[in-house]
View 1 (cartoon, rainbow, N blue to C red):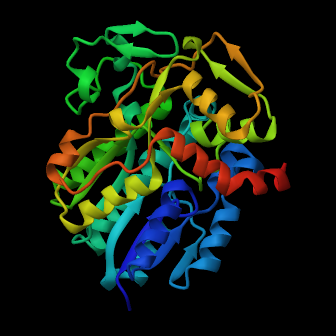
View 2 (tube, rainbow, N blue to C red):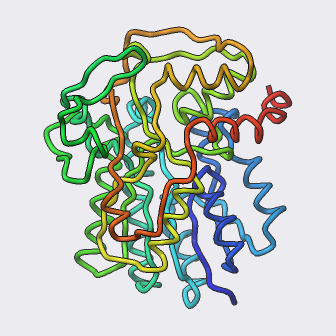
Length: 358
């Protein structure tokens, strides 16, 4: 049997990109995904369409509709492929601030308990296999909002004399003494577990603390999936709401393919208990207003948007990732996509499907 990569959230944005990437390199891909996204955010957010594409396109793809909170079902997968598991890519999550506040227990058990299940099964069945975890910059809570920020015409920006101005925010920022949102808290728990299984048990683990992860396979919704949902609204005429900060809040964005390239670099030369801020950095970031302008240029029509003064609790005003730590460990890695090219790709890949499904 070929080398096996286990991918949780395999029908989602990052999971499906990883499935195609590793399949093309000869891996047998075991995808674990129960379309929880549809349960969380409604039918429009379902990843079933992407799951069917994987099954159709990848002859070496095996799908398992398993909830990562179900340790017994997960163990059966690990037991089946024990001798050939070469990598675990854990992307499954409850990803929304707003949804977490509605059901904190479900949020925590998905993000923290689900991650613990996977780590423990990795330790028992395939401790040699690197374990890659898609964490989040939300582990830093609202600490970035205390930075000296300046309001410009279309964006907020950190003061030009601040150390973060040139490269962005690095991993030395504290995760303590801040408001994380309940989603951020559950991801902190998972993040620390991944680190500890690396440091305490010696597993080859890495937490990739992403900014906005994006790309053409994203099933974007109002509660999660910034660029994909924004472009969907721009292309179809659906109303869009900007929450707070005058629409000038800044996000860095990383294309799913650029993130998977980073995963591949780590797989080839794994380390234990690593933490990396990962995102578009200074190469690929935008404010809400700037993104709206680009979407309108691509679609040729004005976005139907309104403004709400109430920002989301714990939301960042300005986030740009400093990726120098990762690049120091893996100097061959680079960002290959900018915001405009990402939005053009999302539009080209999804416009017909959006019109069909409404």
